[in-house]
Length: 373
Image 1 (cartoon, helix red, strand yellow):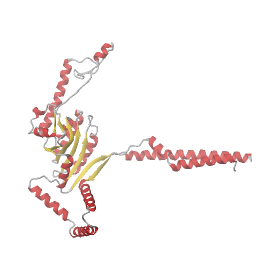
Image 2: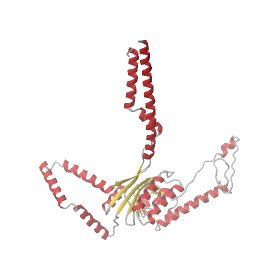
Image 3: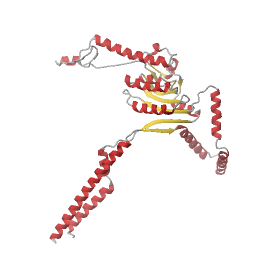
Image 4: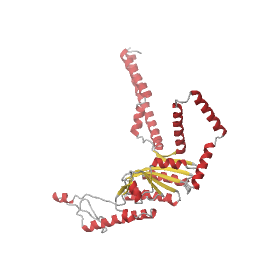
């Protein structure tokens, strides 16, 4: 009996050990597979939303809700109305399309621009212009298919930021203008400095009444700790090659010559900023308003910085209403990034595996305690 008990104990330990080894190997293999899958999933994807369909469905849902809630009509009257509506749609399924076509033709005769296709993208900028990669992908998607009969509506919000970043973003919009695509920038909150540099490239700037617009200027600031270092007898050495390789420094002693050179560099950037504004808004007195000031949109319109006072949603609805073919919103869909640790945790927490191992250990302990075998 003692021999059988020892054999049973050894066997149970062996079973548990083998099970744990197999569990570890399978988990590792699945984790590696998960990493490969996560790598593919983490690739950003373009997302396309049919706005005409979205607006139509929203309107229909609301109309249906109102119809159902109308207590002045009996259930019999409601059924009769729906039955007649279905008959009319079957008789002339293209009735709405015909009415839309007539409406668009009338608007065009009155001189209104009715685009064949409308593309909508959104840009929310920060001081580092950190979302420029997504923006460029969206612009590339538009340029793949858009023509001079189409319109791109950019819903923009940005207080400005780095010169090179916002300069690049403005250049992307210049690509749109160069292809003849009608470009409209809508501002609901703020388009200042670099944000306005982007906006001014548009054929038309539409801004909400209380949005901030302008700030055509350049600013740079840098702290200087030279006095603090001197006070504590700390030397600071800086070696450069080139007279103006470093004009101002945080730790060295700045000179008036360095300050003047730095001002010149800012003025050159400011001149380039003004040149872009003058190019795309020739009727605006750039020198008078390129002072770094910003205004509410209603005041900015009087100064020529803005063309129309309206919100993004209002402008979009009016435009989609007169769009001939489609209205597509383009955005980037970011997949959740998964780390190796997250994948390991996921599999270790899987109930099927943990339950099986737990049951095996409990059964082994019971068998050891009772001396079965």
